[in-house]
Image 1: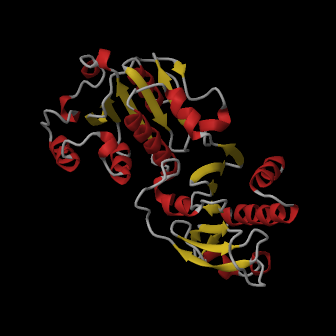
Image 2: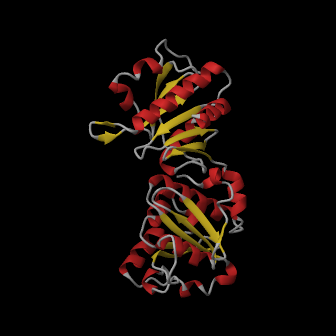
Image 3: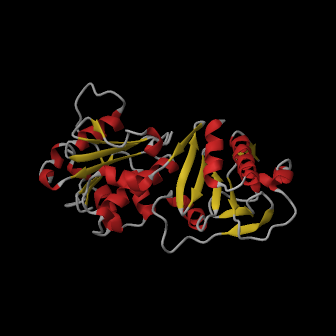
Length: 314
């Protein structure tokens, strides 16, 4: 119970605002365990101080089932003032300049959450997400709240030196985490450019030259563009392919869906072993299907885990 009050206090200016936000968080938690017409509930509630509201409070309509389906949790939301009075309904467009620090599927809502606005989202996986300043700032997964600090984590990654490539890797790990698809990403530093094939041993996974039907099809879709120049939706779909996506330090895509040669006796599952093997070439990132993200350098050193609240989204 304590974390939710800390969250409310950090986002609100007054006690009545805190209570309104706490009610929405608790209602989202209730909905996360229910279904409507046989499907999990997804919803979004926005708080805006600069809006004229009605006399109807969100609290008063939550006893009626219709309140759970008045937004889709992706690009529509019910909007209230900061004490919970309903002001209207927003239908959001996909932004032309999408926010980096928000899951791709929720960029429209993240874009809306600017100028002190706050948006609370329940997705169909049962996660509760809170957006402010066009960023995902809090996430509740498996009953635990986490605070995300994106910019410090980008610094902590340390590589590649090209910040556009580094940001694209971070964004795509975030997307895979909240889409629950899982992912394995390898970054090959310049000094290891000639060694990555000793880990990804099947030439059928290589994009250049592309020999297999899979590689030729993916090469046609990618069209020689580096990873950071691809649409985030395409990047997410590449990462969802079983196996590892391997990039060089400039963002060039070397292999997709690569099956790796890993040492026997590795603990923690194949994806974890693959990420550690890739880390010997520069950096390896594992995204579990439960949403947890881990990154490694030099085989064993976990670099995205010193503060659990920053990047472990479980």
